[in-house]
Image (cartoon, rainbow, N blue to C red; front, side, top):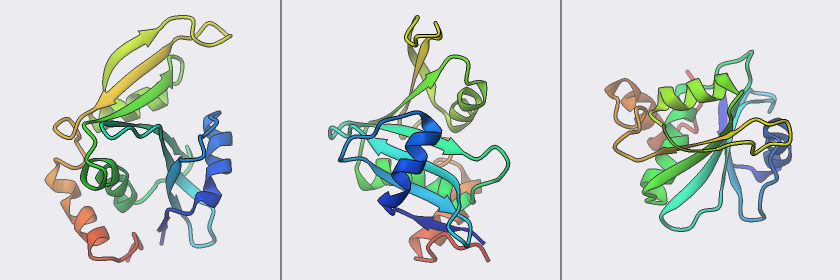
Length: 155
């Protein structure tokens, strides 16, 4: 069983995993195991009405629930009504690049030599229409389960 939470007490943990410094207005959505250990999380930051930045972390050894995947896209598109989600990824983080591409994100820009080590920064964006999670019938059950208020708990 997993639990979904929006407790900002997880932000410091996620920031450490993501090597990211969140602003005071950041929010998160976490998939945790029954004892509260994070399995996956997203920090949403820099919301401006039209777009929001998403910083996604998934434990390489564990799988988040389908409900978590549904919620992390439902929140920005259906609750905040953003036009785009923006993801920033190190060019050498192939797992993150594959995950974002799997969701439907597309590369919109690259900033060469962005990091001290010489890696570039890949800027990926996602619109509601491109989102494979919200637009897939395979995910409809997970989304409806969350909307019914089961708090992402798996049966």
